[in-house]
Length: 420
Image (spheres, rainbow, N blue to C red):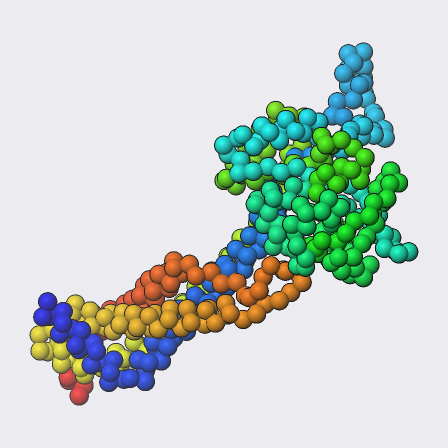
């Protein structure tokens, strides 16, 4: 124990004798670790933000009727022409209603499933929005408001007005922000909507909906599902889509296949719907790790150069240590301990500065129409990044000090003293 303490004392003396070089080496580690933490905290925070926006708004499974041609044509079912070449031109999609057949029983079964957090129906109507002489085409979604708020954080996207107005007034509408802007409408104003069957209905704007996607906000608005069915002139069993949210998103793909096999309906899982987004998120994470690790490696080379200079400057000290009984192993431990001390204190200062700057970034206002629910820049305070930073600092400084330490281990004190 006393020998170990003596080695540490010698290491500390060497480091204090060259304070400027020691500080520069420690700051190299500090800069690398703090930049690693800031970059990873911000980039992963941004990824979590974007993932959250997708997961909040996108159902894990969407049920709808897909209009497409019949898979097997009548001529292909006939044995008369099975040995002949069949060329079929201008195949038309089969006639299929937009509404889901037996939607209410399917909805009830889904809500009983233990894997399902919730399922909510939607009735979609193609309409014209009319204000004065202006007329815009768009889509009106009839929703169950309480379930949309519970499952998909719908309330967060109402930037003006009261989302509960759909529950308070039957003829209330949550108007898309793009439509409101084009027609110069505000909360409390009246708007007329005309369905494809020619019926016109007066609605009162109870709130403004903003998803952050201009192409959506320019056409889409929301009413209660009963109001949408009334506008379309259909019964209360007319449901265009069913949105399902699961307790575990990992079950989305197999459960979508199961639903399609049990019911005569198309099921789109979130993985298929957002494949490009997942790829982009993985690439951003990969770039963040690559840049951060490069910074740490660069700081490690800086420590290597400084410790290498220590050896040349401490040749006499090494010769004296060996001449007074210190073994080559002891000399090696002295230089490795110097590297680890630099790594430890540099890493400790790095995570402190990294956390402080990350916390400051978290308070900077970030206001954009594309992300109406976000108020400040996103930061991820995952403790694993801080632990990884310290570990990487110690490992990189150990490796940076190992080669100079091996060189110091093989110095012959006789050659040094004879040279003096």
